[in-house]
Each structure stands twice: as C-alpha cells, then as structure tokens.
Picture (cartoon, helix red, strand yellow):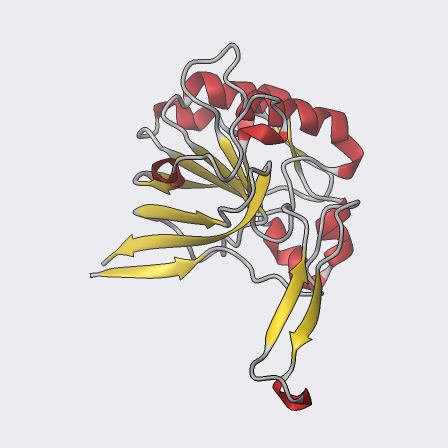
Length: 226
C-alpha cells in the first residue's frame, strides 16, 4: 500500500508570484448560460507561476527546455527532506548542508525552510523576503550530491529580490553541466512541504509539456509506502 500527497499548489488569480512575473489571467470563451453548447476557458500565465520547475534552458543557452526534458528524470526514487529554518532575507549556506555529506545518496533534495507558512498569511513577505541559496551552497550540492536530479524549496524561488545576482549565480551552477560531474540539477520552486511531512519514498513531477520553454508549472506528488 502507498499514500500519495500533493506537494504543489493550485494556480488562480491570488497566486503569489516572484516580483516582475506576469499575473495569472482567466477568460471564459464559451458559456452555456449564454447559449453556447459547452463551457470553455482561456488562461494566461507565466511559466514561473505557482509550483514550477526550472529547466536548464532557464539560465543556459543550449540547455534543454520543458518539452525536450526526459520524463524519467522527473521521477525520483530517493527523495530527501531536510529542515533548514530561515527567516526573511536569510541565505542558505554550504554549512547548512554539510551534514548531507554522510547521508544516503539522494536523487531529490527538498529544503524545508518553513517559509511556506508565509504563503497564505503574508504574501508580501513570501514574494519579497524569501531566503536565497548561495552560490557556494549550490556548488557544494554539485560537488557532493552527484546523484541529485532535483532541488526543491518551499519558497517562491531560490533567488530573492534583494539578492538577484547571487540567485542568478546559484541557478547557473545548478542548471548547467559546465565544470561539474553529472547532469544539471533542476530547480523545483514554490513547494508545499508541511512540518508533518517527514519522509518520502518517491517523488513524481508532472510539468506541462508544451512549447520548449525554460520552466513549467507542474503538479508534484509525493509517495509514502505504508
């Protein structure tokens, strides 16, 4: 027996977004109430809306985008959740991850900063004061967690508005394969990682496989074996 838990958020007009991200929009195209045979809708959204996964193309000119990325790399058999509590504006440093050097090999690392709690209570802080991942921490991950395919975080991004340049460097280190062994590490942002979630046995990620874009909103399902 196994249990499935949803670790992604739905997307609507209230979705908190990284500053500068185009807003979500929805428009009714056909309406039964107005005599049409069916109801249909048109939606507009950024590919970085809600829970989304950054592909190599996001910071790498020749990197693969969502449409070309192999599905088997979006299924993880050894996900690891770690607690790394951070307050607004703080940075995730390499020293915060040092204990992972002796941990069992993981193919997905999910960092729970606790910042997901701001998402519904203080969207301004969630979008503008999120913790950042330092380039040194990103480099440590590439050097020491060589089986890793996915890095996830419970905040709107691994880059904050106040630390854009630092965040860009961290993205580039994870998403390119230049100078490191193994393939790129995809970045899963705006995850729901509640405190009561302790362990996962598998992680399944379902992006929107549409045009070859740099990122994609996705549904994320955690699997727990009973």
